[in-house]
Amino acid sequence: MKYDPLDHVAAHFLRDLQPLRVASRNERDLLRLIWKSPGIERSDLTEPLDLTQQSLHRIVARLHDRGMIVFTSSDARRPGPPSPELSLCKDWCLTLGISINVGSIGLCLMGFGEPLEKMEIPQAGSSLSTEMDRIEAAVEDLLARRNAKRRDILGVGLAVSGHRMLDTAFNCPLPLAHWSLIDLAPLVGKQLGLPVWADNVARTAALAEAIFGVGREVADFAYIAHLHGYGGGLVSGGMPFRGNFGNAGEFSVLFDRKDYDDRPALGLLLEHLRTKGRPDLTLRDLKGEGVSTWDGVTEWIDRVAPAHNRAINAICAVFDPALIVLGGELPPPLAKMLIERTEMNNLPRHGALRDVPRLAVAEVLDAPGATGAALIPLFETVL
Image (cartoon, rainbow, N blue to C red; front, side):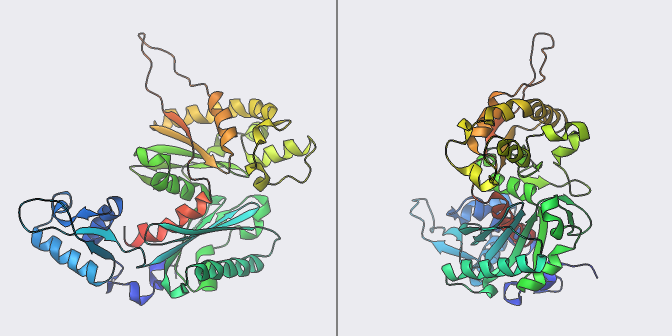
């Protein structure tokens, strides 16, 4: 029987049992508006939701009774009785994001749409059961920081580095072989006793950038995830675009075997820098200051610039976004170096150039994959 995370959501979060729902469609539309505009007055919700005043008041009252929203008094001076201001109750639920990366496992504990705590633990060894035990211990540590319990968690978003296969199985890079080709959501769900939604880590990082980073300024953008490998995600209409097989944004597919070692993948940068006298370098070490001045960095940037430009121009041609974000674990100084070397294929026609996207450095730098993953249970159930 196919795993459905909704079957494992705790009863105290549910609105209906048949069918299983945390919120109705109208309630979700309303909650999303409130989330985007905290403190919005109830009277300002009628028009965008296309609801009668009576229906709106009924839905608001029900959500308030469930503890999902809070009222504050409005100071606005307008004719008629005052309309309450509405905000999400951050304590109504917690969500958890877990990102499985080469070299590290990121965790993000989120309130009702607001990041609260983040943590990173080393990814080491090849035992899946051992790593899941360590993840569970880290989850308990995060909960203890907030004086919270596991029953307070609505759901878990699991972000995995690798191509998506069937259901919640991923084909991961070699250092994550023990996470590969296994239906992970039911396995992690059983370990934590919580519902689990799974997605690619580059796509959840793009979602984090769409909500909390530079991507919030536009509806359509591409996110390049410079991780141990080289991938990304597409955001269309403010939400991730997954494609038919769940692998939209796998930019490494642009390169054949002879070009593979010239991609701007950070695993390849580590190999290059190790030949320059830094034999024990890890991805975490790249986050230190002054990385752009290290011996070999400029040489590597120049070497991968053609591959970077191929990806940028392919994204422009196929997706035509307003913005392309360089993120993942790429240090901002190196992102700026790549942006400086960007060459757009934009020949004039009749003396005019076409519009091209702006390139930007990611703003969500701390555990972006886990942060975006923590949003997935909310978008799947209440927002």
